[in-house]
Image (tube, rainbow, N blue to C red):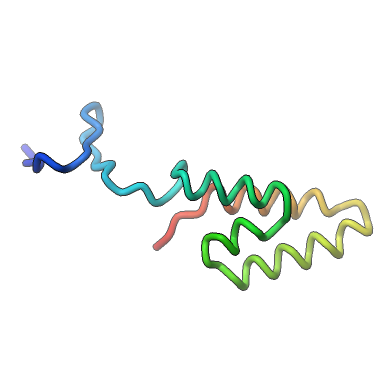
Length: 86
């Protein structure tokens, strides 16, 4: 049986520690996904991933001329929402 300190948040059904709020479903990822909804790459910039932000912004800008920018736009939203820091 695992011991849990009094100040630790734990999901009692699964026994997983939920004290850390980084990762998928966290408020930071939701905010980043919302930012990427308006401007592709902005969510990645908010998460501190400068190179990915530049790549997604430039690809979306180029592909919108061919009406395919929505693909990169959607990728940017999902990438920001599902990002898990290492």
